[in-house]
Image 1 (cartoon, rainbow, N blue to C red):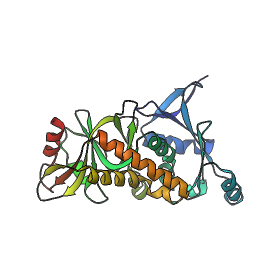
Image 2 (image 1 turned 180 degrees about the horizontal axis):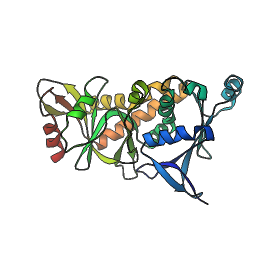
Image 3 (image 1 turned 90 degrees about the horizontal axis):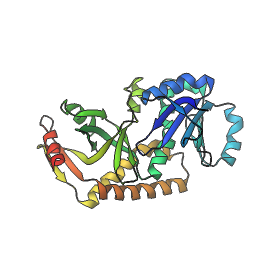
Length: 294
């Protein structure tokens, strides 16, 4: 017997279902709409990782016992996450009282992305700090540290580019060693502004090139030597994990850093990387197009 649930299907075929306790149905629905998801019929035979949301009860009483017996546990802002790897279930508990505080509901949505981030990292991809656009179906990333101008650069691209998100993406590596880009909501807009733009996380484009943005007096694209490109890629892979690191055990952090390094090396072998030197008023996208044409 199949049931209808909110579900997310990535380009490598992996699927996640989102379901919630009665008191969280509205929140799960809102979360799913931010991700551009729809209700889908799920059969018992489908290979699905279930994200199950419930209400956090008796926080103080349960704290010590849960810490002692949990296989995987994440706590932030009265937010509990426990993964059952055998049954492919992640149980997530949210504090309804805490959720009444300003925009905490969106912090919970960001936190709930952690198991998806983790699965993608261990499959060779993962979250990546960059703005995302496509030209004729070719996906490009404009990466760099905060406040370098990624959002502005994305807005300045001509209308014949399709623009997706200006903060982070999810890289998914398929069996043919092809990387595809999935957009991720700009959660900071929701958290700090109380509103944001929903994206269709299921949509994707093949990744053709990564451009690391530099402010300059002349528009130019310059290939990056491997050692410098690797450094830039690692930083972009690590940035989305910053808010989660404080809740990780030492071994988990070590394993994550090791996997990010491996993923960065493999990404560098497959995808060309460039410095994008961009001026405030020039047509830097012409330099990008010259690269994509070759």
